[in-house]
Amino acid sequence: MNITLTKRAIEQLHRVRGNKHVKLIYDIDDCGCAVNGVPVLLLVDELDEHDVVIETNDLPIWVEKHRLIFFDEQMTIDVVDGAGCFQLKSPNQILNPRMSLVER
Image (cartoon, one colour):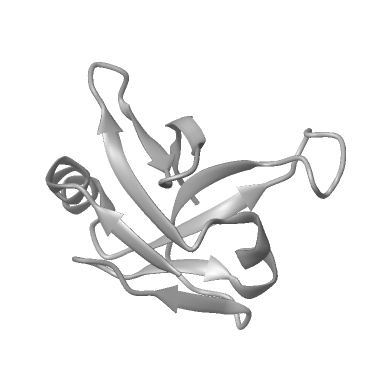
């Protein structure tokens, strides 16, 4: 898996992340079942033993190994103008047009 961060996404993530790790999760809370979920970016202090690093063109992004199946092989994270959120897309689809960044 490869994630490309746009210049605007890099700037935004560096501005807000501090010393935290950036983690891409597939959030299934309140979505009905385990296959219905929404990609979300998390800022976390510590990583879990099941997290794997995904190299990007800037900072590493961590993903839970058992959730890799929900993501495409090539993805891009960009900033949505005027919305205060990110967009996760691949060459085939938009996985989340308004992806939140949540601090835990």
